[in-house]
Length: 202
Image 1: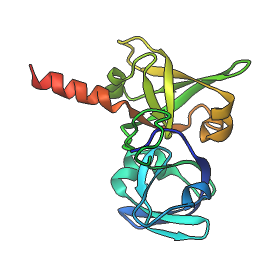
Image 2: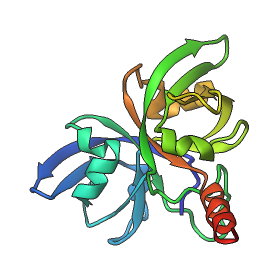
Image 3: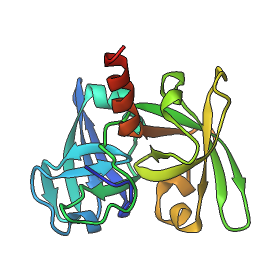
């Protein structure tokens, strides 16, 4: 489990494609301070397993489905990535409950700068729109954010907005995402459980 509080921005050091999978080598520092083989690290919101370490570079295997269902398939050498270690038992839950299981890929639509923050609008797959509510939580590229505005419920091209403070713009990759860029989305898991339970009672 993660909290959506990015610990550092690393970078893709190398990528080796192998047909139905890929090996990613990711450069980092902070998340490797106490790392062990088998540990989980979220990369742009995707939970991945540490399979090897070499100095400031760690290795992970990524299956074809993960590459297809997330923006990791588009990563190239040198790309920055948000990194977060799995939360330790007893640690602070600074964001919200994040599983590291991407529900879909959204797209940055626009960025509107303000005096002390920036409003970012993100288009999302229509089948995810029902799980997103104003003032609720959503994970964008591994960052726990609060939804500040939503499209109408019947909009065929749904979107949501988040307001990014200077720290988020500076300390995560979201400060560099341009209109048209893909972003990994994970909706609040509680909403999915509630829907499932209500459906079972009908």
